[in-house]
Image (tube, rainbow, N blue to C red; front, side):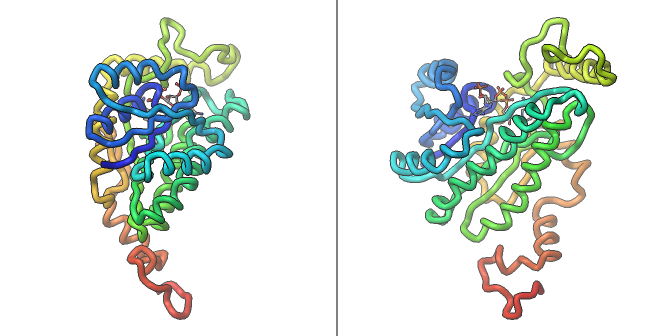
Length: 294
Ligand SMILES: NC(=O)c1ccc[n+]([C@@H]2O[C@H](COP(=O)([O-])OP(=O)(O)OC[C@H]3O[C@@H](n4cnc5c(N)ncnc54)[C@H](OP(=O)(O)O)[C@@H]3O)[C@@H](O)[C@H]2O)c1
């Protein structure tokens, strides 16, 4: 059974993923930035008599990643699956977003997953196998107003993951991205009347846009999909052969993906490797003698 590391396991998809992998019989290293928030996961695991190992990890602290990876391998013998799930959302118009908030979103949603993957990849290469699952979003394939930072972070994650996939496939390391629609998790804090984030600028020319958009989101959360299904999907992805890059989590995501991408993943891979002349690398072969792409 696999050793599975999950980030952001205190709530939402991360918590559900920890339970789903534990039900599957895997060794689950459920990380969270604040282990005092582990009660929900501990209680849920205990009620099903599942074992999960709760470990402290803040994805905005890259200085801790190498030690975390080495400690995990020392204790559990491998890292077979890394689920980069932790993420934050600061809704609002771009002009209303402070630079520090903008950077915080990029640190958490983009640099965190990429740098943690970087810390884990040497172990996966040594194993000759591994699977990195990135929690993306529909905001990773389509841009809409009121979410510029979040959208930028998820687009960056999508692009970097697609490129990284071609670098590491020769070691049997897989990369997958999940696009999810709308799920009622703690990323959307409970709101009564005022849906805007606390302290949203009163005089913002975008206030009505952001407010209307958030009202629509909170309305649609009432009929939202079940986050447990995303946990189960992650188990399915980890067991897959890795040929599929993008995994829609639900019917809405599937429709948007279908509209945004004309080619399926296999056609897209073949096309991209062809135009970049890197098939030899992905196939585990030697570089062309003259160094030029064929
Ligand atoms: N819910 C949706 O509709 C939806 C749709 C598409 C994609 N997503 C993505 O799904 C992922 C999980 O979100 P969710 O919906 O499950 O929301 P959630 O319930 O708020 O879970 C987010 C998790 O990330 C953790 N986290 C935040 N900053 C962190 C940091 N610096 N280091 C470590 N952990 C950190 C949170 O920890 P704390 O408990 O300490 O805050 C929490 O456990 C995110 O990447 C999100 O972008 C969500």
